[in-house]
Length: 195
Image 1 (cartoon, rainbow, N blue to C red):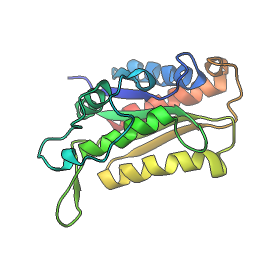
Image 2 (cartoon, helix red, strand yellow):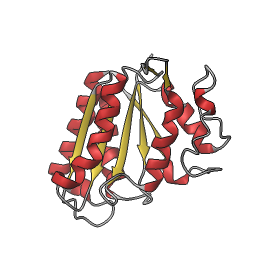
Image 3 (cartoon, rainbow, N blue to C red):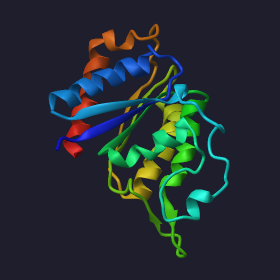
Image 4 (cartoon, helix red, strand yellow):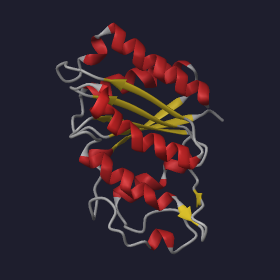
């Protein structure tokens, strides 16, 4: 059975630079025989934005959000993949609001025992970040990278990131830069090698 990676597209732009570079990473994965799936996060219908802290997900043995909406259903599919890539532009020193709502609902995929030991069906699966920004890495993209890296560490998962600072191109044109396209494809190949 072939490996499958899911890309969480968090940009409100359907044809922005983040997606254009993610497409390069997906092409590199395809060259390795790794399939890619995509979740268009900003276009998911949701009953509530983000997590509403009902804690129903923590009151049952089942993993998953108890809010019945497209966002919850998309989050519930994550354990079906071999790796998860957060693909987002930087908005106010973090991921987009839509991406944050998705990430917050991922709380439903973890459980804590009485000793605060965490278990999750995502444990051990690589978490990766592909991000674009108009600014630099320090005090900007690094702030976006840190929570995703910490989540990977807590899950006992490999972490890989590919940051594109100063990505000052018209929407969708970054992948036309051979150096950026090569960097994105190298990221895809590194991710594929982790599987």
